[in-house]
Structure formats: structure tokens, C-alpha cells
Amino acid sequence: MSLILYPVADNAEAALSAPLGRAAREREAAKILGKDVVFETRLVGSGFATREAALDAYAGKVEDDRPGRTFTPPPEDRWARLVEVVAPDERRGRAPVRPVYRDGRRWPDPPPPPRTVWRLSINFWRPAAADQPLDGPQARLARRRARELDRETLRALTRQPLRPVKPQQGLDIGLFETRLPENPNIIVPDE
Image (cartoon, rainbow, N blue to C red; front, side, top):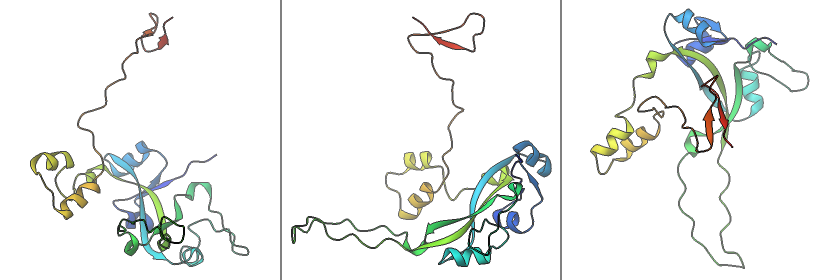
């Protein structure tokens, strides 16, 4: 089985249109860019109301299972796919619902489901240095400094990726576990 060759580019649009190269593994992508890389999945392009419209727009890039138009990309080119997502204008929060106690029903009829659109999702390698700029202070520091955060700052904090404060430490050995004398890297149950 051949590996998927993901595009190597600075951003999602460049990965879709003009990648610098293609690589299956991190070290291959780092060799192409000459610096550390990060694997990323992004949504690109505009949203389409129907799956058929999206398949027509991205013909030859994504798998198409429609009769008469069947297309399956080679295994190494399966780095793009269509996904159904909630439309951007539908992401607003909904107001809490109050019980109605009417006609033998406790709750009102649920609201209609949100409108969805079809978008292209691509996987690609990008430089790790582009990981640094954020939309504001780190969440932990901002919470310590301010008692109340305004709406925009709070929204920016929730969109930041989670970052560790320090590297993760190894797991502790349990009460009834011991290390093997001939190989201290192996932990076995102790009877």
C-alpha cells in the first residue's frame, strides 16, 4: 500500500494551488522546507449548498461516487475530501428554552436544524514557525491578570490551540508494579 503524499506549503491556499513539494512523513516535509513542520487540516474555499455542487467544483480532486461520474483518486492523492459543516451564519448560540407545559408536552418543539454547507478539507504540512502568532495573550496568563474578560478576548482565547506549560512527564509506577531487573524500561505487575 502506498502512502499519502501530503502537500508541503506555507498555508492552505498554497497547498491547494502550488505546493512546494509533497511528502508522506514529517522528516521528508522538513527536508523540503529546510525547517520544522507541523501537520494541519484546514477548510478551504467557499461553501456549497449541495454535495453535488461541491463535487462538480472539485472534480478530479476528491472521490466522486455518483453514477456516471465515478472518480477515485490514486492512494497517494487522497489528501483532500469534502465535509459537511454548519454554515458560518448559523453558529450563533441559541437562547435557553423554557418549559411550556401545554397540550401534555413539557418542552416546545425543537428548532429546525442549522443550515449546513459542503467545504473542501485538506491535510498538508506547513512550517512550524508559523505556529507562533496568536490572536492575543495566552489563556492562562490572561485569566490570571484580569478578573473579567471582554467578549472578543474570551473568543480569541477559546480559539487558541492548547499548549503545554512544560513537557509531559513519564507515568508513575503503581503500588503493585515493579521494573524488571534485566530491563528497567519494562514495568510488570508485582504479586
